[in-house]
Image 1 (cartoon, helix red, strand yellow):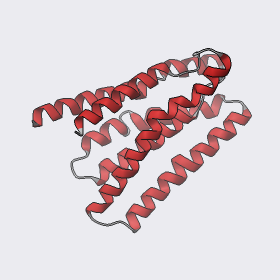
Image 2 (cartoon, rainbow, N blue to C red):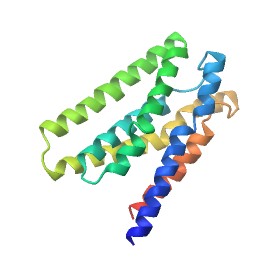
Image 3 (cartoon, rainbow, N blue to C red):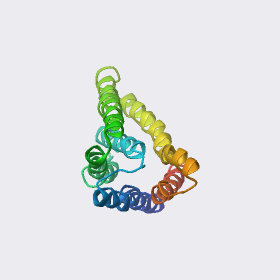
Image 4 (tube, rainbow, N blue to C red):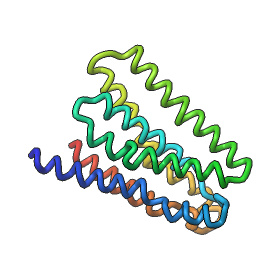
Length: 182
Protein backbone atom coordinates (compact mmCIF):
# COMPACT_ATOMS: atom_id res chain seq x y z
CA UNK A 1 0.00 0.00 0.00
CA UNK A 2 2.83 2.41 0.87
CA UNK A 3 4.49 1.88 -2.53
CA UNK A 4 1.27 2.63 -4.40
CA UNK A 5 0.70 5.79 -2.36
CA UNK A 6 4.27 6.91 -3.07
CA UNK A 7 3.74 6.23 -6.78
CA UNK A 8 0.48 8.20 -6.84
CA UNK A 9 2.19 11.01 -4.89
CA UNK A 10 5.03 11.20 -7.41
CA UNK A 11 2.53 11.18 -10.31
CA UNK A 12 0.65 13.95 -8.49
CA UNK A 13 3.83 16.00 -8.21
CA UNK A 14 4.56 15.54 -11.93
CA UNK A 15 1.03 16.69 -12.79
CA UNK A 16 1.46 19.63 -10.40
CA UNK A 17 4.59 20.68 -12.29
CA UNK A 18 2.54 20.49 -15.51
CA UNK A 19 -0.09 22.75 -13.89
CA UNK A 20 2.60 25.33 -13.15
CA UNK A 21 4.18 24.99 -16.61
CA UNK A 22 0.93 25.02 -18.62
CA UNK A 23 0.69 28.84 -18.97
CA UNK A 24 4.18 29.18 -20.48
CA UNK A 25 2.82 29.63 -24.03
CA UNK A 26 0.33 32.21 -22.81
CA UNK A 27 3.12 34.21 -21.21
CA UNK A 28 5.34 33.87 -24.27
CA UNK A 29 2.50 35.47 -26.20
CA UNK A 30 2.11 38.21 -23.57
CA UNK A 31 5.83 39.02 -23.68
CA UNK A 32 5.97 38.85 -27.49
CA UNK A 33 2.95 41.16 -27.90
CA UNK A 34 3.88 43.27 -24.86
CA UNK A 35 0.25 43.06 -23.76
CA UNK A 36 -1.88 40.83 -21.59
CA UNK A 37 -4.69 41.32 -24.13
CA UNK A 38 -7.87 39.82 -22.61
CA UNK A 39 -6.19 37.25 -20.40
CA UNK A 40 -7.38 37.17 -16.79
CA UNK A 41 -4.86 37.47 -13.93
CA UNK A 42 -7.04 35.63 -11.39
CA UNK A 43 -5.87 32.05 -12.12
CA UNK A 44 -2.23 33.03 -11.64
CA UNK A 45 -2.76 35.18 -8.54
CA UNK A 46 -4.86 32.46 -6.89
CA UNK A 47 -2.39 29.72 -7.85
CA UNK A 48 0.43 31.80 -6.35
CA UNK A 49 -1.53 32.08 -3.10
CA UNK A 50 -2.36 28.39 -3.16
CA UNK A 51 1.28 27.40 -3.76
CA UNK A 52 2.48 29.73 -1.00
CA UNK A 53 0.03 28.25 1.49
CA UNK A 54 0.95 24.69 0.51
CA UNK A 55 4.62 25.55 1.13
CA UNK A 56 3.65 26.91 4.55
CA UNK A 57 1.65 23.72 5.20
CA UNK A 58 4.56 21.52 4.09
CA UNK A 59 7.01 23.39 6.32
CA UNK A 60 4.64 23.12 9.29
CA UNK A 61 3.71 19.45 8.74
CA UNK A 62 6.25 16.83 9.72
CA UNK A 63 7.24 14.88 6.61
CA UNK A 64 5.93 17.55 4.24
CA UNK A 65 9.03 17.66 2.03
CA UNK A 66 7.29 16.57 -1.20
CA UNK A 67 4.68 19.29 -0.72
CA UNK A 68 7.36 21.94 -0.21
CA UNK A 69 9.47 20.87 -3.18
CA UNK A 70 6.74 20.94 -5.80
CA UNK A 71 4.98 24.06 -4.53
CA UNK A 72 8.01 25.94 -3.32
CA UNK A 73 11.07 27.48 -4.81
CA UNK A 74 11.55 24.47 -7.07
CA UNK A 75 8.50 25.16 -9.21
CA UNK A 76 5.19 26.56 -7.97
CA UNK A 77 5.84 29.80 -6.13
CA UNK A 78 8.66 30.85 -8.44
CA UNK A 79 6.79 30.22 -11.71
CA UNK A 80 3.55 31.77 -10.48
CA UNK A 81 5.42 34.81 -9.15
CA UNK A 82 7.02 35.25 -12.59
CA UNK A 83 3.59 34.99 -14.26
CA UNK A 84 2.09 37.57 -11.91
CA UNK A 85 5.09 39.88 -12.39
CA UNK A 86 4.70 39.64 -16.18
CA UNK A 87 1.00 40.43 -15.79
CA UNK A 88 1.86 43.50 -13.76
CA UNK A 89 4.48 44.53 -16.30
CA UNK A 90 2.42 44.16 -19.48
CA UNK A 91 -1.17 44.82 -18.41
CA UNK A 92 -3.05 47.96 -19.37
CA UNK A 93 -3.40 50.39 -16.42
CA UNK A 94 -6.91 49.28 -15.30
CA UNK A 95 -5.96 45.57 -15.40
CA UNK A 96 -2.62 46.35 -13.77
CA UNK A 97 -4.47 48.05 -10.89
CA UNK A 98 -6.89 45.10 -10.58
CA UNK A 99 -3.99 42.64 -10.55
CA UNK A 100 -2.07 44.68 -7.96
CA UNK A 101 -5.13 44.79 -5.70
CA UNK A 102 -5.61 41.02 -6.05
CA UNK A 103 -1.93 40.40 -5.23
CA UNK A 104 -2.02 42.74 -2.23
CA UNK A 105 -5.29 41.34 -0.87
CA UNK A 106 -4.68 37.64 -1.51
CA UNK A 107 -0.99 36.88 -1.89
CA UNK A 108 0.14 39.31 0.80
CA UNK A 109 -2.88 40.06 3.01
CA UNK A 110 -4.68 36.71 3.12
CA UNK A 111 -1.47 34.69 3.29
CA UNK A 112 -0.13 36.97 6.03
CA UNK A 113 -3.38 36.68 7.99
CA UNK A 114 -3.35 32.87 7.80
CA UNK A 115 0.30 32.72 8.86
CA UNK A 116 -0.24 35.19 11.70
CA UNK A 117 -3.39 33.54 13.05
CA UNK A 118 -1.99 30.02 12.86
CA UNK A 119 1.28 31.06 14.51
CA UNK A 120 -0.29 33.08 17.31
CA UNK A 121 -3.69 31.51 17.98
CA UNK A 122 -3.47 27.87 16.90
CA UNK A 123 -1.07 25.51 18.64
CA UNK A 124 0.14 21.92 18.36
CA UNK A 125 -1.20 19.53 15.75
CA UNK A 126 -4.28 21.72 15.27
CA UNK A 127 -2.09 24.19 13.38
CA UNK A 128 -1.44 21.67 10.59
CA UNK A 129 -5.15 20.82 10.43
CA UNK A 130 -6.20 24.48 10.17
CA UNK A 131 -3.60 25.26 7.48
CA UNK A 132 -4.64 22.09 5.62
CA UNK A 133 -8.31 23.15 5.69
CA UNK A 134 -7.42 26.59 4.33
CA UNK A 135 -5.36 24.93 1.58
CA UNK A 136 -8.25 22.60 0.72
CA UNK A 137 -10.61 25.57 0.43
CA UNK A 138 -8.11 27.38 -1.80
CA UNK A 139 -7.75 24.30 -3.98
CA UNK A 140 -11.42 24.68 -4.86
CA UNK A 141 -10.78 28.31 -5.87
CA UNK A 142 -7.66 27.38 -7.81
CA UNK A 143 -9.37 24.58 -9.71
CA UNK A 144 -12.24 26.92 -10.62
CA UNK A 145 -10.11 29.98 -11.36
CA UNK A 146 -9.76 29.35 -15.13
CA UNK A 147 -13.52 29.86 -15.30
CA UNK A 148 -12.84 33.60 -14.83
CA UNK A 149 -12.18 33.58 -18.56
CA UNK A 150 -15.72 32.32 -19.31
CA UNK A 151 -17.07 35.87 -19.69
CA UNK A 152 -14.54 36.48 -22.47
CA UNK A 153 -15.33 33.14 -24.05
CA UNK A 154 -19.06 33.84 -24.08
CA UNK A 155 -18.94 37.47 -25.24
CA UNK A 156 -16.34 36.83 -27.96
CA UNK A 157 -17.72 33.40 -28.91
CA UNK A 158 -14.15 32.21 -28.95
CA UNK A 159 -12.05 30.08 -26.62
CA UNK A 160 -8.89 32.01 -27.49
CA UNK A 161 -8.52 33.38 -23.95
CA UNK A 162 -9.64 30.21 -22.16
CA UNK A 163 -6.58 28.59 -20.53
CA UNK A 164 -7.26 25.05 -21.80
CA UNK A 165 -3.98 23.43 -20.69
CA UNK A 166 -4.28 25.00 -17.25
CA UNK A 167 -7.87 23.75 -16.96
CA UNK A 168 -6.90 20.27 -18.18
CA UNK A 169 -3.94 19.85 -15.83
CA UNK A 170 -5.91 21.25 -12.90
CA UNK A 171 -8.56 18.60 -13.62
CA UNK A 172 -5.92 15.84 -13.66
CA UNK A 173 -4.28 17.28 -10.55
CA UNK A 174 -7.55 17.31 -8.62
CA UNK A 175 -8.24 13.74 -9.70
CA UNK A 176 -4.84 12.35 -8.72
CA UNK A 177 -4.80 14.06 -5.31
CA UNK A 178 -8.34 12.89 -4.64
CA UNK A 179 -7.21 9.35 -5.48
CA UNK A 180 -4.19 9.78 -3.21
CA UNK A 181 -6.31 10.93 -0.26
CA UNK A 182 -9.08 8.31 -0.44
